[in-house]
Length: 90
Image 1 (spheres, helix red, strand yellow):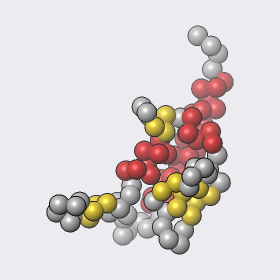
Image 2 (cartoon, helix red, strand yellow):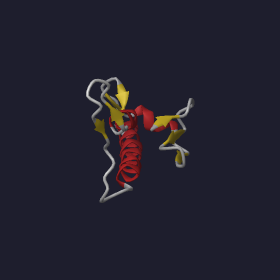
Image 3 (spheres, rainbow, N blue to C red):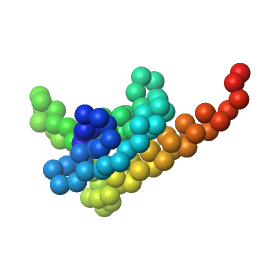
Image 4 (cartoon, rainbow, N blue to C red):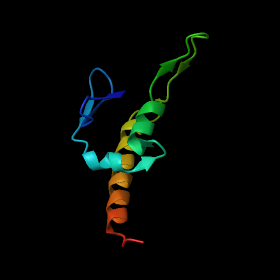
C-alpha cells in the first residue's frame, strides 16, 4: 500500500486503487503525520529481513477491513478539520 506522488490516490495492491482523496484529509495530524499517512504506514504487509516473518494486517475473515478503515479515517479527518475550522479563535 502506498500513496501516489500527489497523494490523491492510494495504491492498495496491483489491482485496486483508491482515488479521489481530498487534500484536507492531510490537515488532521497525529504528531508529525496525518492520520491517513499513519494508517497506510502501519497497515502495509511487511517482511522482517532477519527472520523472514511476514506481518500481514489483512484479515481473512474480513477482506475489506483495511479499505473500510481507510474510509473511516478519511471521514473522521474531514469532519475534525471542519469542526476545528469552525471554532472561534482563542
